[in-house]
Amino acid sequence: MTNRTVRALQAASVLAALIAQAPASAQQKTPELAASRIDRAMQSHSKAGEFSGSVLVARAGRILYQHAFGYANLEWKIPNDLETKFEIGSMTKQFTALLVLELVNEGKIKLDGRLSDYLAYYRKDTGSRVRIRQLLSHTSGIPNFILAPGFLEGPASRTTYSVRDFAQRYCSGDLLFEPGTKFNYSNSGYFLLGAVLEQVSGTSYAQLLQDRIFTPLGMKDSGYAYSETIIPHRAAGYERSGKALQNARFYDMSIPFAAGALYSTVGDLFLWDQALYGERLLPANLRDLLFQPNLDNYGFGWGILIPKPGSPNAGETVLMHGGAIFGFQSVIERVPKHKELIVLLDNTDSPKVLEIAQEIRQALSLDGD
Image (cartoon, rainbow, N blue to C red):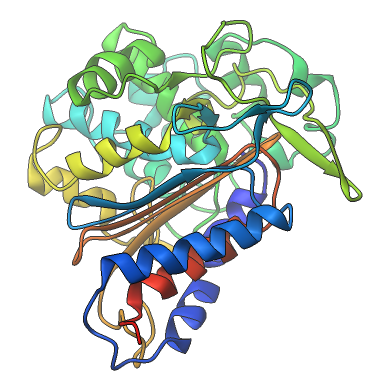
């Protein structure tokens, strides 16, 4: 959940450029050939030390490729496998957005409701100006707490906070602009959405996720990544120091909260992807708001890309989001027209996950020779 997440969303244009390099005439999909290409690419990146984690690729509800690479624990040489649980960073936001829309559906939250309507303790001068939909679309103007000078390097990132305390200390800065007029990626906004969810429901954010999403969908390997909790098959996170890896810095998980505190597996995220095509969690009119572009083509918890003309996916919608938190990188991409899914979960701070996803996208678009 560092500023790499911001760069991940901005890199959507790079994805479009790479997609455009594939021949536009390639229309038919050959699953076996695509899987072979994907495997060659993944083996190459793994050997180069550019990927350590799990990958899953699916099309039309069928898993084409899934594999794990590298180590879940380098010190004990425990390999990653398909049951390994990875922190997913800002991919958490899509789950938060869906929970908000569920409470909208139940009449407990209004998209045009003001933040001050739900958080009595939040500063009134700004809370009365910010709408829930603006928090969801990163157009609220509330500053991103991780960009505060020294926040990630100092003791603030290693301290445990209550939701109210952190909201008041680090999510209550002066607005950067008039709400609704600009896009500015803000973890603070999604932290506050978590606070609203808890206040309105009287239930913890973690329990809301369990009751409303994970249990109904059978996502048994997903949850809130509490630092102190023993979580079977949890991967350790690693950061680069020069060419070597070292244990990731500690980050208290009360901080990312509804903006980035979840863990999951590629298998669970496949279940999540499939559920988003139906109405098990939300009626279609509200579910589709997740993927409706607002400013800078960001929906509610999802970035939206329309590839350039001349590319194999021209005119098609690519839904994506990255995640980055100390020692972990992740990306999810969905192409609803073909029900294509790419999930990459990495337990290092590899800068390559978006490039790898781009290579997989090319493999899916090629016909085969």
